[in-house]
Image (tube, rainbow, N blue to C red; front, side, top):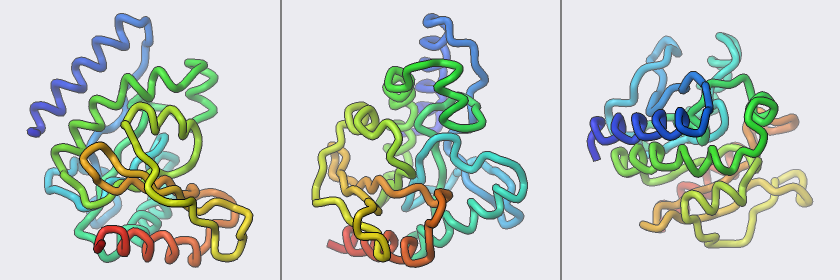
Length: 201
């Protein structure tokens, strides 16, 4: 899958949104950070794709914190890049809901672009941050749950991650959002250790 194919998928999405009357600025696609923490296109294949809503947004301070979290979560793998479940520029999930109402149709509409990105990078792992609209994500990407959900190390009643796989078998871990209150270094280590174990199997 070439970058031209990703561009074609993006063009098709833009046309579909226009037909549906959705007037919106498309967010970034297929990106990562340089050593200064600036956004750059992810030209080189990355072993981890980190995907969520509005990944990496929120100002310079927020950007540097998010970059560090992504680096910690992907430690032991050959690089990471970021993608967004909904390719519409927004402040957060709440802003998307306020502007567009139901999100599952947008998740489905944007999945073609992200599937092209996944095919381009052929990652060892996809980390999906947060559990919002998980049923819609599972449906849009054809995910099959592979194991019982894992609990947080210090909070056994709270879910840390759910282990899915894409139709081609790529591990997809839906994880507690790293920016959520109380997310700890123990949580990071547990996610990373599980991810490395899954990918080594």
